[in-house]
Image 1 (cartoon, rainbow, N blue to C red):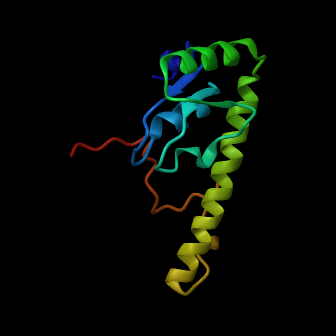
Image 2 (tube, rainbow, N blue to C red; image 1 turned 180 degrees about the vertical axis):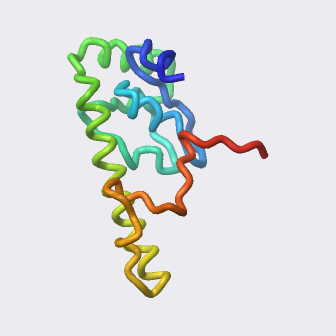
Length: 129
């Protein structure tokens, strides 16, 4: 899948409402910048204005956003580095919350990526429902 995503000049995330939006993270982790519409659901948690353009939810606006993104000289390594830093900070907050819920410091149980052995990497692990 990474090979296919890396062929794209940018990713499109156009839904107005969603639950977990893994596609936006997959694009960014592959170093692919994103053109998106405003939404409810939190997909913008890992967005950085250097790598994401918000457009109106019309075909013409999306087309213009893609043209704008394609005209930028985006460093794909910078895109990936940015989203990894944001995800690390997100995990740091999550570990803090888990520590408060557990009534003990959970931080000694995580690795250098702040990854707890009880976490499931949904971008790597697939389950059938």
